Length: 399
Ligand SMILES: Cc1cc2nc3c(=O)[nH]c(=O)nc-3n(C[C@H](O)[C@H](O)[C@H](O)COP(=O)(O)OP(=O)(O)OC[C@H]3O[C@@H](n4cnc5c(N)ncnc54)[C@H](O)[C@@H]3O)c2cc1C
Image (cartoon, rainbow, N blue to C red; front, top):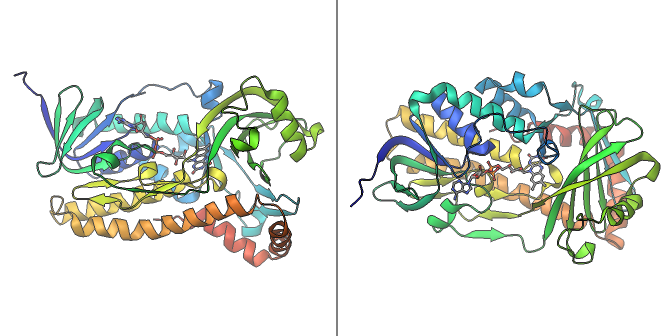
């Protein structure tokens, strides 16, 4: 029988996306031996200038920013981040709500950050801890909980006190641990991401437009005449076409002309499709395995909260693991695991319900539209309520 190479770590993370790498950094800094498995490791400068990667961005709120400060990479990320100072939300009936940094007396409402750039610096930071880090460019094959043993497809074996599934929306860990998924049956959207050129500078304004077939989000870049466009729509809304972008810029232009003034922008012809999932794992914990990030919860991107809530989970989970380590209880993690789950699942479920409600109600037509229009009018007049909402979006996901 071929000899199986084996490694032993305190915590083994499957998934080297932003969530897995952030957790990995926090645990390495706290002195843990960490294993990281990813099928594709992009250690050196992933190309953030290719059009596909340049348009893959997230609106980062303050707690995420503070986590990156703690890891020591925020200054680097900031070099290419674009602050946004205003956020305009327009409903189907064109009623608008405008949020501004002036409402809360702060410099901006957050930063638009390139996801590939975050990955690049997170990888740079983990490589400072090589002596405690085991990297496996591989895929998991099986997890045996009572032995706490993960077998990889290459035949390598890794023993760990805790297994963390940070392996995204279609998580292997979730399936291997037989954790069920609660999917939102109302949402069947795809996301299309591209670059929009403004004829009038964007002045650091983010925009969101709800219309009957979906939601269009414009996120300003450092180029005053370019925004990243995140368009989420039902495939049915586009005549059932799988990808309305392919060779169909005219179709897209017509849709955009309904929503924006044609004199305001030009659409670039290159678009990337990203699947949109809306689901939550029925449990974030099974024996010695835990889920985090998109493996635990996937949100519709309209509120730009998916990554932010994932980073909130990371912060809470890292605190639980570090507290268990201090009490020599990493192998008896139940109470800490329950604490992680308690602090996250309810908050996550509520966030998902609110966001799903926005996606279904705010794009609906008829009497509902009039009611929402009136609500938006009142909200726009209430600086107190707006201040509360901005503070929640900016700081509410504090772990
Ligand atoms: C269109 C769109 C726009 C969005 N905009 C925003 C926004 O503005 N703000 C925001 O906060 N969030 C946003 N999000 C959500 C955000 O992108 C995700 O929540 C976040 O990227 C999830 O990170 P993750 O690390 O959990 O998962 P992923 O990024 O999916 O990483 C998973 C990692 O696991 C690895 N992996 C998976 N399976 C295996 C396996 N079997 N073996 C080995 N490795 C494996 C993958 O290679 C990958 O590296 C958006 C999402 C979409 C779809």
